[in-house]
Each structure stands twice: as structure tokens, then as C-alpha cells.
Length: 151
Image 1 (cartoon, one colour):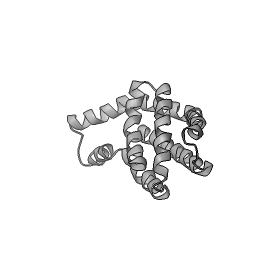
Image 2 (tube, helix red, strand yellow):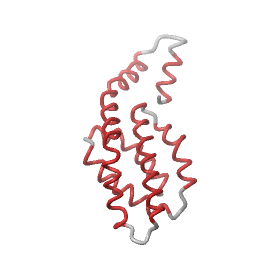
Image 3 (cartoon, rainbow, N blue to C red):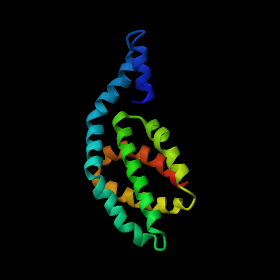
Image 4 (cartoon, rainbow, N blue to C red):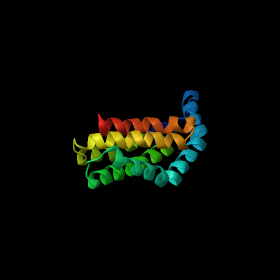
């Protein structure tokens, strides 16, 4: 759960929530149906999207070792799953704290070019499966991953 909601819940022990606090909570609650639907789409279409990326990856990067391509695709799967959970919980910190630091450490500088192509292809794929509202939920997480792994 995002830090702001955690703080609201903690404050509820001391006093009732003010109108401004309730608006934050209402906004999150109102977004839950979109968050759930986005999560379900990402979960249900994960393999289809990642397989489409895999199919285009080798021709896009001739000369790159198969093991390096496989590692990048495995990283994409992890990022996608953490992004989906982050969307559900409205917690960008989940992705940053639990995954990206580790991925950055295990991915050397040579992986940046591979990841650049992987995420370019994935962005094309995911836009075919999500509507604008759903993309708006995913994009901050995906951008964070791309910035960490590519730039």
C-alpha cells in the first residue's frame, strides 16, 4: 500500500480523518476497479505479450548471445509482475525497493542495449492490450524500470 494511505490509516488511531484525507482515500477506492482490471489483463496476457517480444528480439539483436536475451526476458517478466502488484497497491516503492536495485546489480552495462530493445518492443505490445486509463496506471512503473535498467 502506498505510503500516503499507510499514514492515513496510522492517523486514524489518533483522530478521525479530515475531509482532505478522506478525498485521498476516496480517490484510491474509486480507482480500485481500474487497478484490478489492469492487473488481470497483465496477468492473463503476460505470456502472450512477452512471447511476442521474444519472437522479435533475436532478429532485432543479431549477434547477442541467447543467454543474454533470455536473461533480459526473465527480467522483463519480473518487472511486469512487480509493476502489476504496484498498480494494485498503488505503491511505486514496491518496484523500486524490492526489484530494481537487484536487477540493476545483476545486469551489467552490456545489458543496457538489450533492455532498451526489450522495453521498446514491450511498450509496443502492452499498448495493444491496455486502454488509455490502464496505460496511465502502468506507465509510471514501466518508466521507472526503464530509467533504472537502460539509462
